[in-house]
Length: 221
Image 1 (cartoon, rainbow, N blue to C red):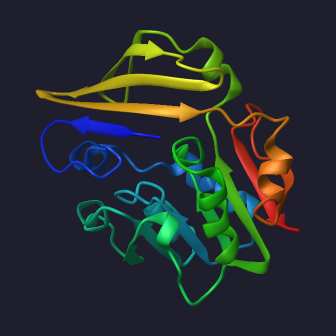
Image 2 (cartoon, rainbow, N blue to C red; image 1 turned 120 degrees about the horizontal axis):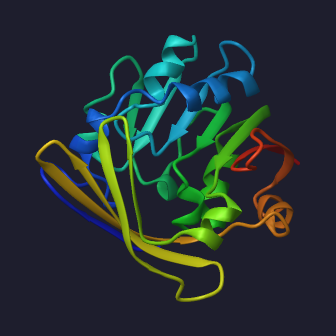
Image 3 (tube, rainbow, N blue to C red; image 1 turned 90 degrees about the horizontal axis):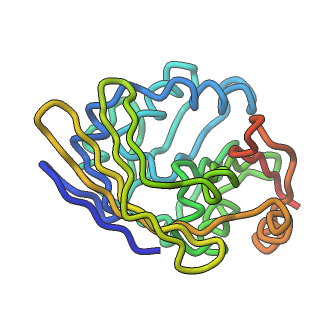
């Protein structure tokens, strides 16, 4: 799915603004959820790591992390982890990992089969893949709106649904006197199709990790 972005500083290939994400606080909640779902000290391959908002808390929790991103500017903000610049689709590392993370709703933005194949080929036999998807409610209820969080003012606009299960929108981020925009199109991954989508890449659904069913834990078939 196509995406684009504008604003000060580097813009990653997927439209994400490097300076914006670098200015946000660490995502300790997501890191804690991942940590609770895998063994202590489990090795992690983090796909689409960005500026390390989840990477750094995972390192603090004792996990060795290999952080992958297509943006050199994003990876330059990560400290303490091995970094690899690559498109997820093209990644072919020689080792496997106890956990592979496909977060930040990436499953909705690209070719599901190709993304999940990349997860599977880097997964240890007893490992787990953790996928974060947009909640089903978001696709049904997303509408022009504004909200504030962590000192950032957000504005969603230009919301459309060109096809069933497809959501296009733009989000504006304001932080002080800086403004960024990110346009995206996302494809809904529903509960009813999830088992078959996972199975096509040699994975099976273990369980959901949150009440909203946005976080998925999968294992090898």
